[in-house]
Image (tube, rainbow, N blue to C red; front, side):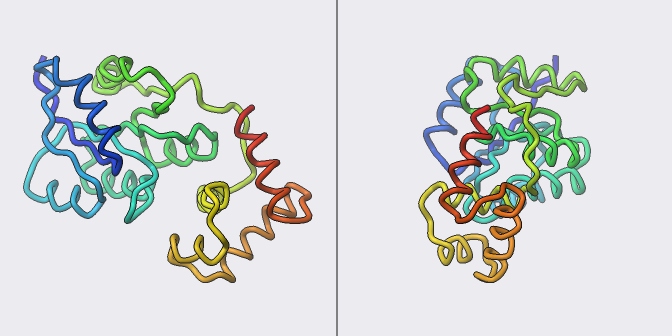
Length: 198
């Protein structure tokens, strides 16, 4: 077995340290680089080869789903495992459309990671058993807005975070309230949280 050069894009150092701790005992899993922003990763990949990327969805500069698309366009041979808190089907379906190789939840035992890596390197797909079987009628962009509201951000703060106008945020919230038959955002958030826990 040839060593698999692994890169990690994750903005929480504790998570990165956990990944490295699990992989460092295996000589076939050398860590080629660890990064906190998409920009850092792409600068690295311009000059360095990597076989596999472990990728979070929530990043400070871009969505991990956008990073996945760009990696698959620029480096089609590189395997990508999304390692995320998000178990909602809408994220997984978007990732599958963008040719993700594996989707592992942060709630899964991290000790499973080496076997997940081996699975995707054999050319097989891996999707965590913890992924919700429910399909939400929202786009990943709308789910991103909802998740920020769940975190306690105001609509203005959400607009700043995703670099869109408040009108855009309100338009998508209105669409979601209509689909879920909700009178206000609090009701929408409550229903959404119940759905993703199914």
